[in-house]
Length: 131
Image 1: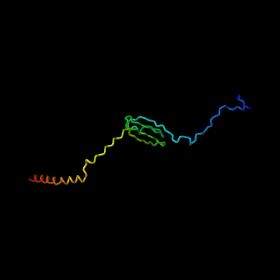
Image 2: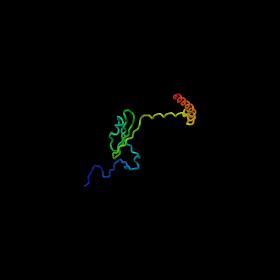
Image 3: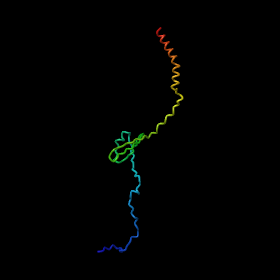
Image 4: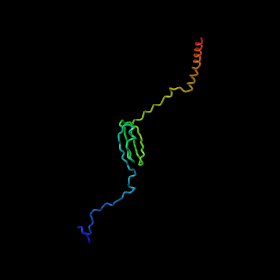
């Protein structure tokens, strides 16, 4: 038996639905971003014991602003911790002026010039002690 719904049998809706386009591999973004959470910590000793879910990554910042640690745990539960120092790098020492130093040849020449004087002085001391 035919069921009557109040509309004529030739009724067509006035709207045309948009055609459905399934999501395929080609129109997905190539890189999927992951959210990294930031937490404070009290020193480096607190970082290894900080809880992180498998497959998760957290950024841990020291309250004293000394370092930043990124702790990641792989899906099999293996943790890895990377430390970054927040202090600015130490300034490089200026180059040393090598003109203020004596070369080996100059040193040997001056040493040989002083050697006869020191031998004479040592000989006088020995002579004075024996008297």
